[in-house]
Image 1 (cartoon, one colour):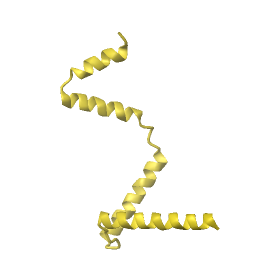
Image 2 (image 1 turned 180 degrees about the horizontal axis):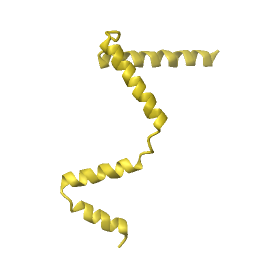
Image 3 (image 1 turned 90 degrees about the horizontal axis):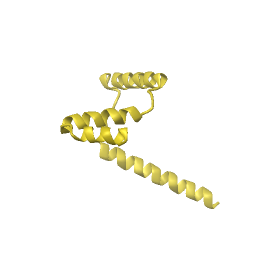
Image 4 (image 1 turned 180 degrees about the vertical axis):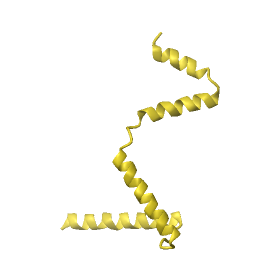
Length: 87
């Protein structure tokens, strides 16, 4: 019997919460290592956004409205690309 088969059999005998925790750990192990520069850049961006909120320089938009705007923008962009492609 293979090691993977044995491990799988043992894992399936675990209670559901422990199986979930194991699955989570296994999935995390497949993700690439965190890039320190990227992490630092996100920290700065989050801090800047929070500062704008705290200073009242930010206006929130309801997510449905944002989605509508994004879709409209993508549609307009697609139409422009199509128009230029025909010329």
